[in-house]
Image (cartoon, rainbow, N blue to C red):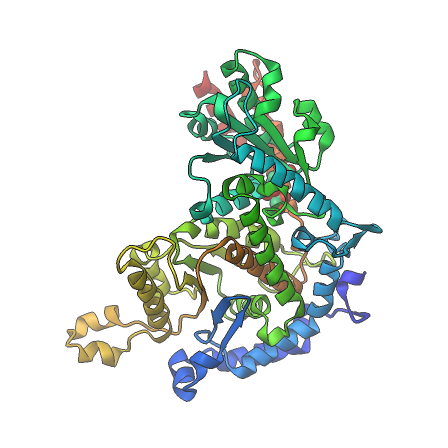
Length: 551
Ligand code: G6Q
């Protein structure tokens, strides 16, 4: 199969590769090497081990690597056929082999005039057609030309979607709030928990509210339940006028038949394609709420940022390639230092939901235990991604990163400029970024602690071992373009990881089993008579308990 070959040769198993074996040996030698030593031996390390591309600067010098480590990791990328895999993805090969689909989120931001063929059809004109339809709609809503059933302009937009149809829109709205139309309200409903919907609409005037039902399949339990609840809520507020629904509901989907069945005019449906994975879809029509918030021009600027990073990833030599370097570094810690997690720490309040967004992107993509050939892996794959914005995290979980027993590589993300200048705040914020990466890398030795006059018994508690690795990512300021670049950076980093680990980063069978079981349990919770329960004793007991309490 094409996706598994490197220049025509069948790909070796990862642990059978020469570079992997060399890395194993090298990792032993590196296990005791301290960042203090690496910096002491090379006065220029902090300037040398940096890359800048498209306005994104990466300092990777505070990683536990030498030039030899990087060379071996780059060899591993070559031996894993990364170059060929990148070309395969960008050219529309069906590399999502378990779902037999191309993986073309990069086509969503391809400039007009580009040709990308899927099943002998150029997909780029369709992308721009949808973008233009979104822009025309967004303009009408934003300038008040689109009115609700009673003639009032739309003030409130509620996106109903879950997973990939929610996390991207939520994150992009929060991240780009500075650029949003402040006299409009944006809410996001995802959970099937009643409270999510109830709280989202409790203070909204239905006559000024537009629901966007965002669902690739238009069959997802949570989304369709919330969409039907929204429909009933709207109908009640509009005095039962069915004809009002068309003015207050639009859909984003690939499934026109289901959209129509729901009662949304397909003229008000914004389409996308099966080659866009849910977690890679925030720059497709799934981003309609984002476009309504920030306007078509800012949305296009975001797409330009995505595209700039795509081009960098596709063309830059691997040793200067941001997603390649960051992807390889995460493989280094996951597989050779047994690191279980990666912390993403944005020092930018607007990026508060960025770690939550990355959790899906990274963990749904690479939380896999079989290779493309269906073989169980004998190495670790996707680490757990998590994080919170600085400086808040410093006053809670950073303790464990500094002095705990686990190795937690960190990505610090910060900007030279704030979007809300208030006195000295920004200098203080950035001082904390630099202080944290310095403290993590260099720590504080026993001698230093003693020299401060610390009593002997307290010394061990106050020693910081250091040698905690981190990346520092800096950009000018958070703009739509920079957000696009950052998201694409992580998308491609995930791709690099998946290529090395030989997994399919584009399916998500792991979410299926629970979904199917829930469908079985719903009628058991709701049936009037006593249902015959055939689960294990724990599940049966829990179902009975719930039924008893429900009354
Ligand atoms: C993402 C996943 C998943 C998906 C949701 C929503 O990659 O496929 O999170 O986005 O399950 O699916 P729908 O958009 O079809 O409702």
